[in-house]
Length: 307
Image (cartoon, rainbow, N blue to C red; front, side, top):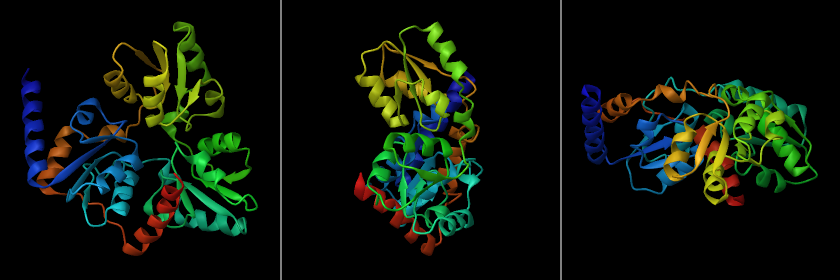
């Protein structure tokens, strides 16, 4: 009871400070439920950044991981971008550096380098074009068929995209540790417990997992699939707090996590208290050198022109 009163006071303070600072709160689908509940926008990282760029907000509070806040800063240089916990990083994004992209380009003359948005701004600056988990196949299909494709940094998204597009590509040996925890035996176990359930998994999952799915989709794709598919039970192969939003938006349907081990510890670093502190102090701010921002923006804009 005391905790409930305390949290109510924090939420009220957040709302007041949000108005005072002309701020917008962005919340990724993997954030803890109470943080999801205070978001002005909830969704995928690029989707959130694009929505924030279209607002007249002066401050962006990004409840996600660091590369996501950087993407918001790339698209909204005139706004102050704050991440409530700068230690909320992304292991996948951290598996590749700009020098690695440069080396891959040198090793594959004439190639087109496609990069997942799950990368740092400095890496994006070295790319030819960005993609998301939702549009990776569409981006790759749009490229010159006479040029080799290099895909970074997620080898599982790359493998799935190569399969979908029938396009050979060179890819980096990166992966999401959270999605990698979801194993085929987890899917089999869930299907045994829930016969007839539909299986939807994120393309960051292992190939042996995506092969077992009825739908391989991004988190926004999961929301669409769950809403439009005539099924009562869904097995969900992604970060576990995606279940919270799926439940909220689909009353009457049941969502079962493929694995309870699929927890991103970095996503859980942001709390309501940290959101409040970030609004009080307007820091820590995410800044990007302009030369890097402009080059990274070019790679993002090339993708946006296609989608």
